[in-house]
Length: 147
Image 1 (tube, rainbow, N blue to C red):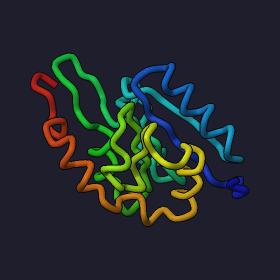
Image 2 (tube, one colour):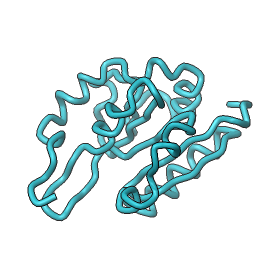
Image 3 (cartoon, one colour):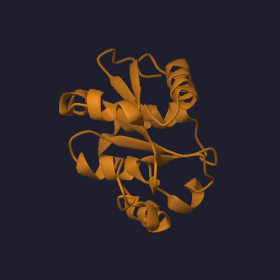
């Protein structure tokens, strides 16, 4: 359990239900400050300070737009690489094939809470093997048309 009360997690998800589930799962295993927002709120609420001041950002892998899907979690994680660690989450079963500490799904061998603890304690490993995830989702890295 994380005992550093200055640690904080920012969650970005596509639906209120997923946001609430992620918040509850992270809070249940960690003594940590957790806040969240929806992808649709990011243009108004997501500020550089919000990311910079977080110990970890947990972002849903995919964001749905009117004309397509984008792997927004990966795009945002790469933009902030080296400044704030990211944990990208998805409703997939790829974790054993991806091998990236900064990616978690239901097939992961550890719990979401344990992965949050790991990345808050060792943020430098978050982007290890991110290329494996990017190769898996390559068609979703570009901006959907009419975005």
